[in-house]
Length: 92
Ligand SMILES: Cc1cc2nc3c(=O)[nH]c(=O)nc-3n(C[C@H](O)[C@H](O)[C@H](O)COP(=O)(O)OP(=O)(O)OC[C@H]3O[C@@H](n4cnc5c(N)ncnc54)[C@H](O)[C@@H]3O)c2cc1C
Image (cartoon, rainbow, N blue to C red; front, side, top):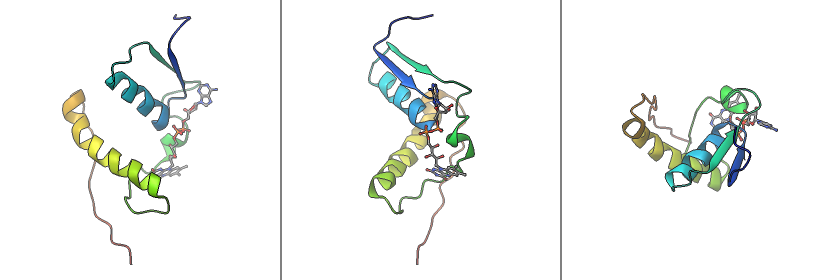
């Protein structure tokens, strides 16, 4: 087991896994993720997976927008099935 690393990401929920993914994509290889239970076993396990672009927080809306575009490319990038379904919402 590694005893030294440049970056330790603590927690394998969507935030930690995303941090690891984006670091790796930027060429960081000396990165470790530690999870105390199982990957996605925290809040991420309970999430409905909705990515509404319009919500109470501008920054969360921007994160959702980024994720919607990311999911479109993940299947091709990883070769794994990615079940992202794009629907539309109307707020009145
Ligand atoms: C019922 C429900 C529905 C939701 N629906 C949506 C939705 O539709 N859309 C949306 O955008 N958001 C939704 N959310 C919110 C979303 O789930 C959370 O904002 C998101 O999952 C948080 O991710 P996270 O990685 O920060 O935390 P978590 O997923 O909780 O991950 C944290 C991880 O860290 C690990 N951990 C904690 N301490 C340590 C430690 N000391 N060492 C190692 N590992 C540790 C935990 O085991 C866990 O796996 C929903 C939440 C709930 C509860």
